Image (cartoon, rainbow, N blue to C red; front, side, top):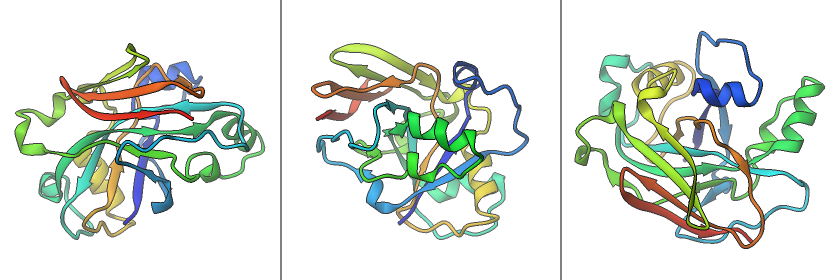
Length: 204
């Protein structure tokens, strides 16, 4: 399986990070399968970064093999969603960007893709209006709504599948809203989709 992720997919998040360019196409990057962190296991802050940020996202699970998928048929290719955290080594990201280098290492390191329990998409009446949020130590720190996505799920799938064959079990991280910030040891992270807690783990 592979992890496909979308960058800069919420306008307010772009503003908080100083991104002023309006992208005509989704910004895509990949994470290896070794990035997966699941089953409530703790996230250990790596020693190569002094500034690990959480980025809360809606995560979509691919359920069919597909290539060159038309946007109008994309809904057939995913069946479940959850809340995930795209952990980012922000200090390394700035360093890589300054010299124009790729920044996969600041996004794709081990355990940098935390995922919660998947729930069937069919239990939601409108996938274009899903609310999700993150609490740290019981306090809400980030909230998003898929209605605010610059590129919708079906359009992202159509775009990505032009280049990469989607396979059963692949995961799509759909981008983070405003409110990202650093994590520190001992913190308790809880991710919610609508009112259901799907993600629950600690920072070590």
